[in-house]
Length: 167
Image 1 (cartoon, helix red, strand yellow):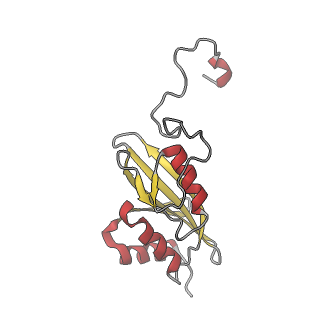
Image 2 (spheres, helix red, strand yellow; image 1 turned 90 degrees about the horizontal axis):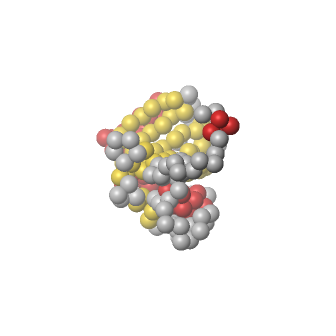
Image 3 (cartoon, rainbow, N blue to C red; image 1 turned 60 degrees about the vertical axis):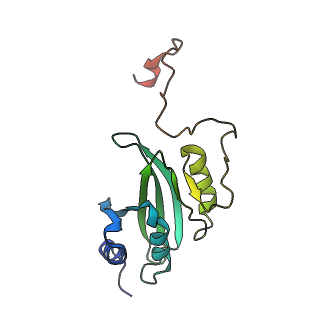
């Protein structure tokens, strides 16, 4: 078996998915691949099931909110090939107005809790998730606290001394 390199992974994905791979970056040696949201599970299944790739461990799954320019939400998957000790990052973005993406729980059982947490904090709906409910915030919380939609501090408060916080 050949050594699993970033170039090999990139070529395998581009051969299989073509222009549905939106971008490929390599930051600090970690390969980051951005894909269309409609093929997120196809890409994850390919990376998992293809014997020459073998990314069978989901290290982390989280959400992102970019509110500059286009108002986008995203999901980031960190995958690990344990025998080769290779890690990659897969990203999928979508408009905040349509925060829906397929659940990875059918492939990775560990995605269950991480998707619930991402739903709880970002409002991203994972279709096919077995029990997508809030787990850390109260059920009647009317917003998603990790979205960049709210001021960090109450501008009407005068009882705080910001000099203690380096401002």
